[in-house]
Image: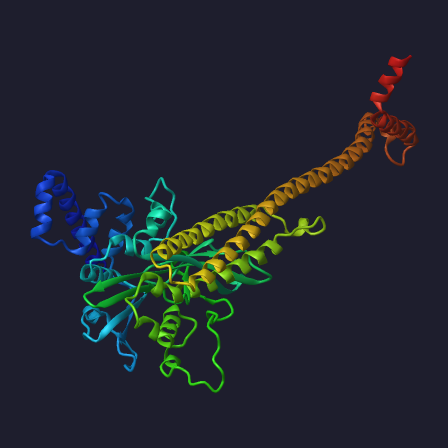
Length: 502
């Protein structure tokens, strides 16, 4: 297996070198001729695009990797006839070509892919002629140091430009329960999810023995129009059930307090529910949630050609619920970092300063993600002014942004408070140490004269304890000790002032 991976990597390096060398040698005219006569494979197309979009380089590395897990692919066909039955079918990876083979009666086909792998990226991207930046925005979510790696697409593309692309990558944070904090003692801060596209999971400070984590997530979507049918592609992450630490150690993980909150109005108890929804309704998985909402509201995709806003409504609603839990978590940690003079000796340590700085960076990144989503919605609303339900969505996003901003300011102030309290704690320790040194000084002042006098009388046998002249030792040493102590306690600065007055 390892030899196969090495061979694929060497083959990719050879292909990439040939493509790069050829692109430099041929003329612009011949480039056009080649594009008209030959069709590059998808990975070659991505290699070529790295010349103009450096942020795609990590996508090339991803495409040459072997898939670790199987992906889940669901096809939802919606017919134009109101009397038609809604159909939802799960297909294996090997039959991915079925996504663009459909009946003429199908007006909308929704393709949901969970835990997409490199093979499906190449096949779907080539079949539907998808911009590699769409897949890169979904797969590349790491914020690495700029001196070591190019910016991820979410940062390399400005929000106004991303809004015009026609596809949407929604990045968010999900709160995870990792179990007991004792399990993660002396464990690394950075963890990874166990999937085809590993997501960063950050271990948070323990809350009274409970270990929580923040996992990154992404949901991506686009709409392709093929003749009379709208092909709607959605990429979602699988539920995070395990996280990986160093040395390939794995730990169980779950969503905090269960699954995703339902945001639709509950039907009455005697209403007839959607029959197929029960089979898919598992609110621990975003895929299952989307299958439920699309199935319950499939009639909304029959009237007009599906737009990106029409497709994005339910995914955005689900993700806003995740952001709502995240803001509550920030509020909880804001309360956790509220110190008092009485408990700072037992609680405050240097790691708190580092954690508060991390929360500040997280708040900045969260604001950026929500702002990018708002810009995309506003741009699309100008094209589709009839989408009235997005007004409430924008209100919810503004509410979340205000909450994050409020808690961010609170944590910012807490950082200054924690820094000043560390200084107070250090000064207290210095005072205590000075008191201890003062006590040691008095002890030395008592014993040094005694030892000196003892050394004087040690030359004669008559001055030893129990001898005739032993009393002379006390007559000399004790007054000398009193004299030394008085000399050390004399306020010389006051005496100098008295002398100057006279």
